Image (cartoon, rainbow, N blue to C red; front, side, top):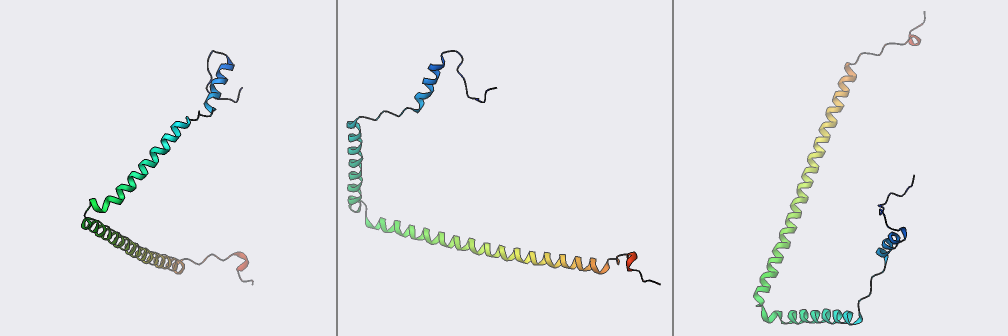
Length: 133
């Protein structure tokens, strides 16, 4: 029995199927040099355009709106820090509650074992432990 479990082409010559399978691993054709140069020039033009837009931004937008945005970002950061502080405090309270429950569980378990030890019958004496006459 063959160990190969791949799909097989029914019919056709084995050379044709092997050649078709190998074409998958062929390296891609490199685009022409003119296309690479055009892509590079377009990317540089887009970068220059964005930089020009950023340089003209203070003239296009009133500075008060930028102050409003920075104030809003400051409030957002302050709110997030307060939220994280509240979550941290809540986790601390939950940890303290878990420790208190663990302490109560340990006390109850110890008390139950103590009561069982006190109320347990004495183990029967073995024959070797009986006094001799």
